Length: 217
Image 1 (cartoon, rainbow, N blue to C red):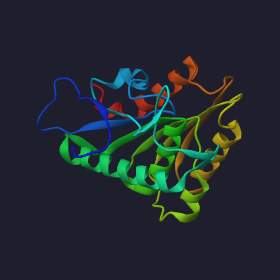
Image 2 (image 1 turned 60 degrees about the vertical axis):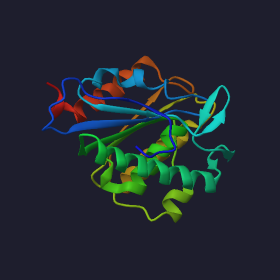
Image 3 (image 1 turned 90 degrees about the vertical axis):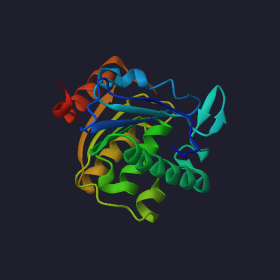
Image 4 (image 1 turned 60 degrees about the horizontal axis):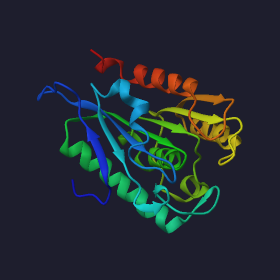
């Protein structure tokens, strides 16, 4: 693939050359890297393509996808560029690998969840579902972007009640916003800070299992 992103890719086991497979794209949080999130979807590695992307910006101790002016306000120029690059990555992956275009999922944590939610609006029915953990949607995405319909979208949105980085209220607002735009939303809150609890992992795994049940042998 011709892409600016460093990424890890695993493909389904025992692939049938005549079959297309689901794909899960993973987007990490600020200061992390592409090794962080694959553990969250290990139950699906046998039947899905998994792409875990590294943010292009050095942000010790790892990387970031975009910089911010303050919490809730990404630097718009950088954000726009990375969102376009992510869209191109998803489209090229669908074209290059045996990916079912009706089973395309994006899972992100924190900064990655911001991008997952934004990609859903930017790409419309090219994204089947999202898992957005402790994120939000920047106001300029819904107010200024040429957003596409999310009537088809299935979204799992979760947040820690004591999140010290991104306010938990923003998770509830994301739920309400996606529902207003017609998406089907599963929303969960957990007695936690800025992280993924075992309960959160259990629930997002159940969500993806339901979404991918047609592909589980």
